[in-house]
Amino acid sequence: MRKQLTRPDFLKAIGITTAGMALSACGVKATESPTATSLPPTAMPTVTSTPNFANLNACINPQLDKLTTTYQLIVNNKEVLASCVDQVKILNPGSKEEKLIWFISTPLLKQKDPSLADLLGGIPLAIQTGYETWVAPGFKDVTDMHIGCEFMENENGSDAPMRRNFNFGVISSEWGHTAFGYNAPNGDRGWADIADYINIDTNGKATLLTNKLDFSWCEDYQSRQALSHLDGSGRRLLLSHLIYPTRGSMPHGFENLTREQGIDVMTQYIEFTVNHFKDRFFAYNVVNEFYLTDDNDAQDIMLKVIGEDYIDIAFETVRKADPTALTILNQQENLTKDWSVNGIHLSQTTLRVAKRLAEKGLIDMVGSQCHIDQGPGSPESTNIAEMTEVYKSYPVPVFISELDANTEEYANQPDRFLIQAQRVKGVLQAALESGSSYFNLWGGFPDELGWLGPQAASTPWATGWVEKPMYFEILRSLFKNHAKAA
Image (cartoon, rainbow, N blue to C red; front, side, top):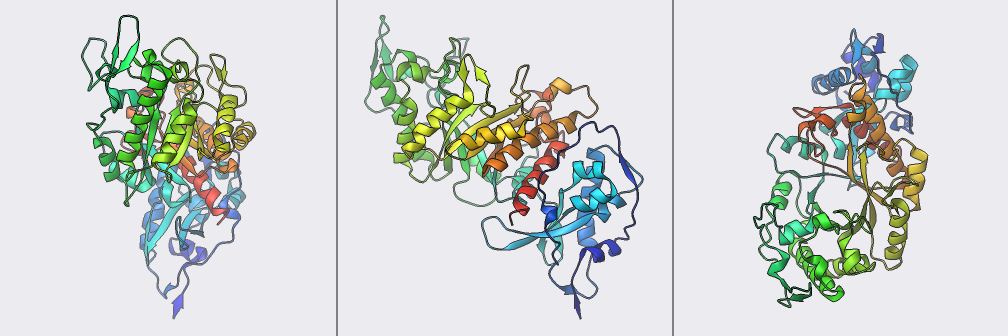
């Protein structure tokens, strides 16, 4: 005789009884979005008449313990959460196969504790990987989106979290530093300099020394290392960025080039890079932080030397070199209607350029940097309706290209990481509702290696790769979005 493993079977097997559980000064409560829990529970594959619940229980219980600790719950026991565990089948990304996921049911939890349901409802706990084997799911296991992270060269235990959560990596490369090197303040030379390719006379006139620039020395150690931390094979990397046109990121001397020389140098570099890496890179942030007109290091030098059409030329060059690669126009903080930098309205400028590229069939996605609460005056990231409207206005899907959340502004509040999770949730919900299919976490992990510094605590992981509320909020947002459409 064979029997199905149902939710009542599971609860009976682990001896669940209903018990109370309350929040301890949580402060911020999530606003519930459409959840996977509206789907009817589905039965697990048939098992023996005396099924082995130990493996499933051994997977779910530690996850419930993590949530209890992470969300600072007052706990006599974890029976309330465990009694609200349910199951659902969703389609496996990239295939027609179904996979079974056990998760905390929002409707069930609402009946027992609505405030707890707002925080924890919809979080996946276990995914079946074999006949009687389960594991805790990562980001990539609960969604059909493409989930990436910036790769940092540090062997600090990152291999397991990367393999568990991500299916692509991002190599951050400011093109001037990568291709030409730089002159350090103390006069030391980098690998090379623009002066190795051009001559600039005393009047500032530039002459190219060769018709063909040589970038063959470029090192690809970082891309090889990143691939070693990702499962699978083939093109699993995104280059960010091919062109970073601000003065602080450009090769020295570029300002002295004529328009024709600037185009020549730019296109030769793009052609070399795309052809050299096309077996590893499936996508490129072709141009980043464009059309800025400040007089300091943020000024767009490409705009000054070549003109507005440098972006079109750069995208055309990528398309010709690799027609299969995804092309992205990346801009900072272009998620709200009214945010501007030095008089440049970021979302409007993004929209104008993206429309022009879309009419020519040159662009696949608009990149949106989401450095939440980066500093005083950062754009608001809690108006989900406004962000969704902005993202939907773009002619191509949005790629959340750089996601992190600085907590310094509310560092002294006891619910610091709950606030952080809710800020991230807003951006994710807007992107998902607008039809995004790619998103990328940014800046080095865990918190002590974040690009904003350890005091910012801007990543999903605390020291030791301990998952924070930000981690679980991303996990459940991805799962809820995917499961409701499965």
